[in-house]
Image (cartoon, rainbow, N blue to C red; front, side, top):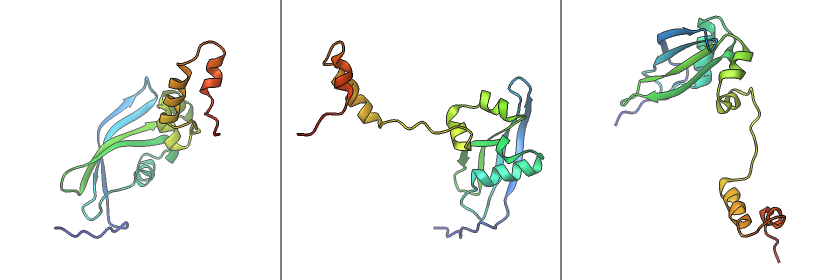
Length: 140
């Protein structure tokens, strides 16, 4: 069993491969290779900060996702995007990644189980009674 101490100040090497300039989606996209031999992993925020500094862009325009740590540790690969403008980012980025980045509010909705229960309760009625059936059951 290898006992590796988690040292957040340990050096990390970041390499970008397959660098593309995607004019259609107004972004630069690339594969990120992170070498972190003395750390279990590197946070996405830290990676975004380092990439923003390297490519002289705003940290909010850099998006990192899809990281997988290679078996045995010490190396991770993922995907990175750098959008030209915030407008392009809002337009082309999926909603869940906008929520993660703090550019869109999270939609609060009832749990999946509750939604299914309401739907199935409403199935038993027709017409205007359906809306009453969708409301939560009254306790006696």
